[in-house]
Image (cartoon, rainbow, N blue to C red):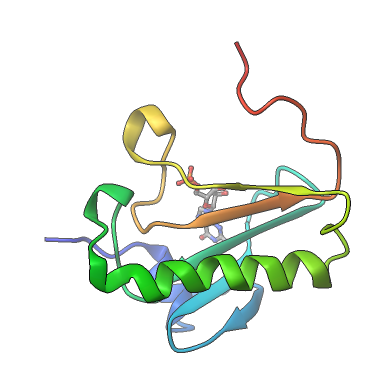
Amino acid sequence: MAVETVFSKIIRREANADILYQDELVTAFRDIHPRAPVHILLVPNQLIPTVNDVEPQHEAALGRLFSVARKLAAEHGIADKGYRLIMNCNAHGGQEVYHIHLHLVGGRALGPMLSR
Ligand code: 5GP
């Protein structure tokens, strides 16, 4: 049984967040602890706890995350220089909130993807 997180409350606008985009499938809002000048979280409106729980019926929402990420990157002026999209899974992946989310991070050179 999936357990709701604060992200479900943000999607329903029951918790505060700086929402930048919302449609019938996905919501995008600024990360509360930004790691870069642009740090936006893109989430499916339906609760999917981790990538391990992804099923074919989720493909429309998960595809939408990328098209909205592309649009928000352009709107925030980081498309040409580049940015990073990250989705963490479970403990070794560093996942803290168990409602899958795509991090859109940019606005500065981000360096190597993984530290040694
Ligand atoms: P994860 O480590 O699960 O991939 O990333 C979770 C992200 O959610 C973190 O970057 C954290 O700062 C962000 N976050 C956690 N709680 C909240 C919240 O209540 N509001 C917003 N806007 N971001 C949150």
